[in-house]
Image (cartoon, rainbow, N blue to C red):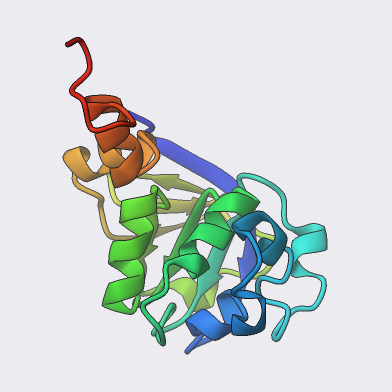
Length: 171
């Protein structure tokens, strides 16, 4: 099980909704095509600077809005190592787990800044800010859910378990 997630932070405020994360005008595009427009309403250069493994840090109510899973899919496609926020909209949280994107709730996101290098200890429920030499408490993902995330999410797990055509592997 992956115990540490480390990356550079991209900082956002409160109420970042699914229309900001994945703008609805691109809903007809593939995830790959639409992902380049992620967060452009609040940071037009976000996808030009964001690198696989980087971590999104935000305030309250991250992922509110529609129940479309295109928002967490876009962030996963971009390679987000994790998303850390004070609080997540529940449907966004569940969609993220289902597609294999780890999320951590942390009351101290105001102490992190854009560009900080952080490391999330998924077992201990702690975030170490290498830039500021500070430690913050965060939520822990239970081991069975972390395994699901590492497998790529629920659909990936079911495909491995039952095969792509619904037949159980090994039969």
